[in-house]
Image 1 (cartoon, rainbow, N blue to C red):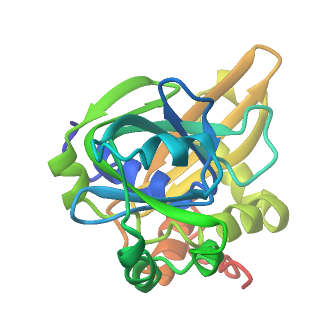
Image 2: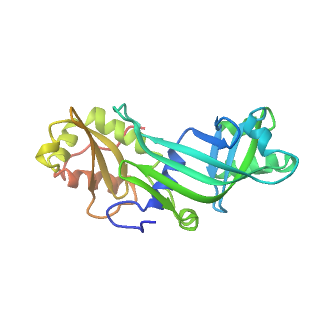
Image 3: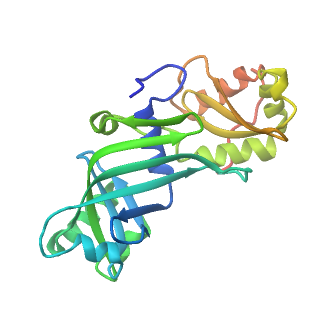
Length: 255
């Protein structure tokens, strides 16, 4: 695992952020077709709670009377919130042992998950939807730089980026309303990369990533802030400084 840095999130932080952002996930068990989960939530005790339809083949296999856990993989896709030529930023695979949540504990478990991660799918628990527990044994993340395993202990100790919930609105706001800021940031790129279409790809407490789409392919470049930031005001200020426009106003994304 790559440790924490001052220029970018650790691998464990990247996985936690991807888990928080990803809307859909695919749960796969050997012998059945992968199923799209209705909910996934990584808990601090090392289990991922997933919701699936009660009549799915995955639910049937996981709830076999033997009571033994079933090896399973949960695949999460982290998509960029803008329409890009290639929207996938990373893939995360969480492997472990899949077990059912007993019927008597289904509603209490739904309540515990809702306290940490309110989600409309929890309203359907017991009404055609059930919860399963994936007890983590390993995790891997892959992006355009390659694939890397993440120690489960480090993963559970990490936190998602503090701006993961607002990232979509920030990137869309920059892309639509502040092309001049993107142009300023582009001046930090090597001349050979300035010829393509430059779009904001990601933003976190450590910096901003840009996607350059050109006739020769796509390139991603990360521009780090001078130091990590912890709130939206500091994030706005860091962006302006990075762009060389310390007095540029109006970067706060619309709610």
